[in-house]
Length: 105
Image 1 (tube, one colour):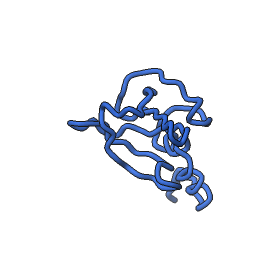
Image 2 (cartoon, rainbow, N blue to C red; image 1 turned 135 degrees about the vertical axis):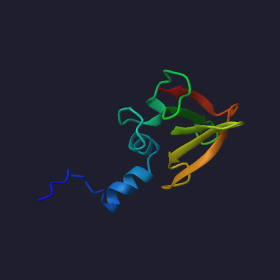
Image 3 (cartoon, rainbow, N blue to C red; image 1 turned 120 degrees about the vertical axis):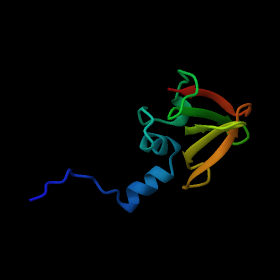
């Protein structure tokens, strides 16, 4: 008899909740933060792989968090949820991006 560890299965609803929330996506990517609005996240460190990067976009008055996956020559490669509505995406953020407000370790 083979005993396997229980692995919870995400339902389509769970996956949509993650995709449609930058904070839930960051948590699912391993960022150690509590579930709250991105605007309530407080910078507490320097940029690290696996750490959070915080943004504020004044035109839409919106806050955002993503996870740093790599340091590239000209910027951070990040993974994020809900930057594009209800999608998990990756992109390059330049080191001097004016919308970056801080980092979470």
